Image 1 (cartoon, rainbow, N blue to C red):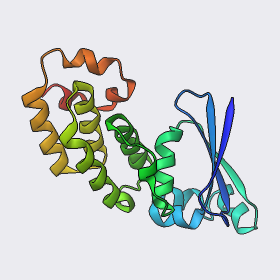
Image 2 (image 1 turned 120 degrees about the vertical axis):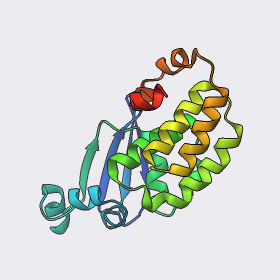
Image 3 (image 1 turned 135 degrees about the vertical axis):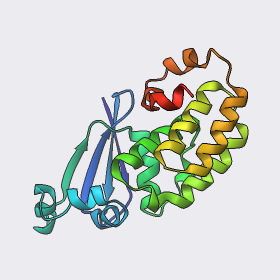
Image 4 (image 1 turned 90 degrees about the vertical axis):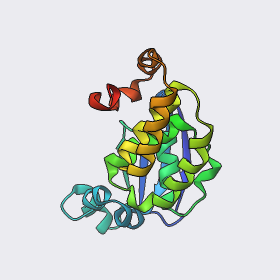
Amino acid sequence: MMTDFISLDGSGDAVLAVEGPDTQRTVRFLISTKVLSLASPVFAKMFGPDFQEGHKIRCGERIQVELGDDDSLAMEVILKALHYHKPNQCPVDAERLASIAVHCDKYDCTGALSSWISYWFNNLTPITRRPEDLGFLLLAAYNFDDAEQFKEISARALRGLTLDFPLAWKSYNILSLIPENIQST
C-alpha cells in the first residue's frame, strides 16, 4: 500500500488519514482542526472537548484520525478548499462531484463550500451527456440540498434518459445512494 502526505497547514495540529477509493493508497493530510471545526459541526464535535481527539489536541499533541470509510480523492478536494488551497487543481468530473457531495453531507460542510459547489456545477452541468453523469449530478444536487440544480438536472434527465438508464446506473455503487423515489419518478 502506498501512502502520500499532503500538508494543508504547515502549523497543523492533526493528521487525517484517508484510504483511496481502491484502498491501494492512503493519503495523510496535515490539517488545522480549527479550520475544520469552523467549517463543519461534525468536525467541531470530533475535535471538541467531549472526545479523546479534542482533549489530546488541547494537551498539545498532534493527533492522527483514521477516516477509513472516506474517498481520499473527494476528501482532498474538500480539505484543500476548506484550507484555502485551490481545489481546482484536482479535476472534478460528475462522479467526483457526487462523491464530494456525499462527503460534504456526511461532515455537514456544504455551506462552507457553497462557492466551489456553484463553480463545479456551472462547469459540469452544460457538458454532461452520459446517463451515469446525470445520475452523479442528481446525487450531488440532492446531497448538496441544491433545489435549483436538482430541478435543472432532473429536467435534463427526464428529457434525455432512455428507459435503460437503470442498467447504466447499476454499475456505479455510489448511484445506489440516490433515493428510490427519485430514481423511479
